[in-house]
Length: 325
Image (cartoon, rainbow, N blue to C red):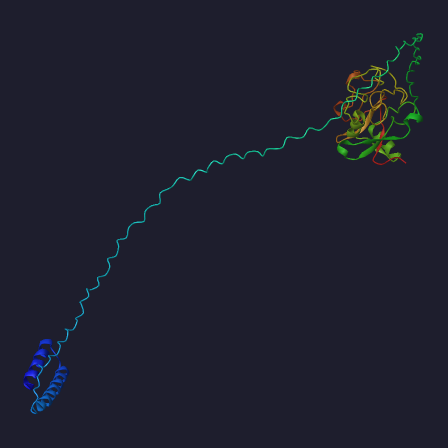
């Protein structure tokens, strides 16, 4: 019986693949069941019939649950790189047309109460004006008769008009010099029949010098550059230039023959004058002996060539760089 129970348990273990510990446990259980059976059999010997219950088979253990095999994790496929889509140029949105704001309704201005117009005051009718009596016409006063202008008196030659020297400005602001107002000696008739050397000595004796050709031309033409001392046109009566005359006149007696700018007399006519030049002594200005009075002018090209002549119609005047004392 014991053997049968052990075998049954052993078969059951073989069927379920029991291990050694499991079999040992079954054997102990079988021994326990046999001991119980013996105890029961001893009681039956005392006249009691004991029904022997068949040994209960041990429940077969449920087969061990095997874990289901997990599928191998496959790496997820990498997505193929797609080219980035090019941005499509979108047209700029047109600004929505905003409706023009409606002007706020202004309240109609209240009419200002105007005062009733006052009736215009009508002026009282003026009496008709009577025309004033016209004054008797008086004869217009006759203008006072102006005395006829007296002819300019000829200056008497001598010390009164020819005294001293006149200041003459040089060209281009290059200073000034002084020149005798009249021909030497400054009163009466001019001194003629004098040589160039004698004229220089007489000027030096009085602390002056003989004028140069440039100074004679500047004083004669004046600041305006006239051809003659008095202007640009020849006037036969202004200077003492009678053709083929035989004598000179007193100095300063022809006021029309005066330099326009410097008040120097008789630079043309009466007697020719000695002046200094780069080539020596020359005579300028013409004289009473000049055959062509119109040709006697202020320009230096009219002056004579250097010479040592001595004639009654050649005189001189003096110049100075400083004012006379």
